[in-house]
Amino acid sequence: MAVERINPESLFSYPPLSHVVISPPGKLAFIAGQTALDREFRIVGGASLHAQALAAFANLRAALAAAGARPEDVVSSNVYIVGLNQIRANEFASAMQVACDGQPFPPHAFNLIGVASLGSGEALIEISAVAALP
Image (cartoon, rainbow, N blue to C red; front, side, top):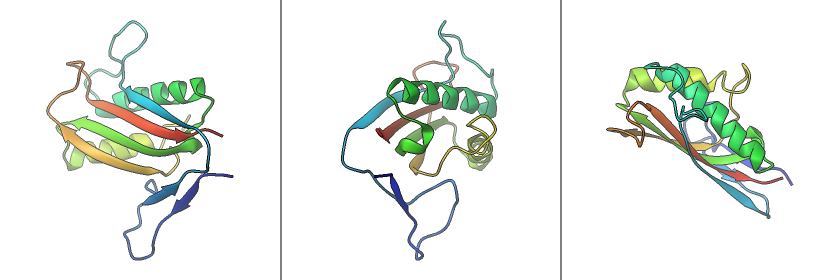
């Protein structure tokens, strides 16, 4: 049984977002917040939110793969962005459109949350996720 995505007609439509995601019976993977840090604990992407978002999505994809999941299996995520405003939200949305090797990250239930800072002083974005394992 696949993940089911529902967008009620009475709610706004935004293609990267699914208002409701129903997970099939089975196991869930809870993915810790992924930032733009590489294996050597160095930030990737400098001061660019777009570049850091792409690196964070790449790390999320690696964590999903380790759990036996794919981006299509993500049912929910929380995205924390330092200094969130409309410009940064647009940068994130732009990165989300090419986050999977040039393809959009699949629609899922997500929250954009503005924060003052993250665990790594240089990090501008952190993405935690829940995936329904196939």
